Length: 216
Image (cartoon, rainbow, N blue to C red; front, side, top):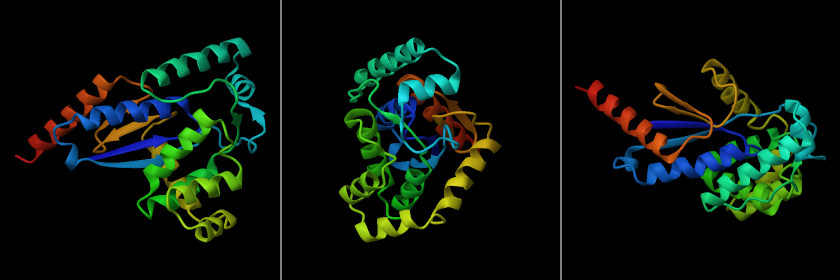
């Protein structure tokens, strides 16, 4: 069974949703027969690169007051902490994640995508270091086991893995995903937004049951 997850590292709900899905998957009887594929999605592809404080930038993007956005940050932090995740409020900056998505595809080709994604989430939400700075991207990639020279070559070539990112985003649009996280099970079932572990469990069981029924 195939599960595709469209996500953006800048998205707190993707960070929390990934943890909840992984909890559901770990308890799923047929987990060894589930292939998880992470796909790219930019929440703000027109964003400048990593200078505006996150609260101000997102409040402006969605037409909220600063107080409303702070409240959303506090809610995200409480949900993250409930999953055992680190989350610091308000110190991040807002930027364009396209370069990181290119690097995640490079890592995917070397079976290190999940490791790089987990570290990127940690750097962004717990360490509050900029995931838009090239040297940070290089250090993260090296930390998970990628070769520095190869990482720099990818980052310095604007075309490297760019089409992979765009292809993921086209697929998201074709499937009707207007935001992330967006989970698709066997291209039959979609789960959108931040959901509970229980809902993910139900989705996995339903998709597996229908898959088994279709074989008979």
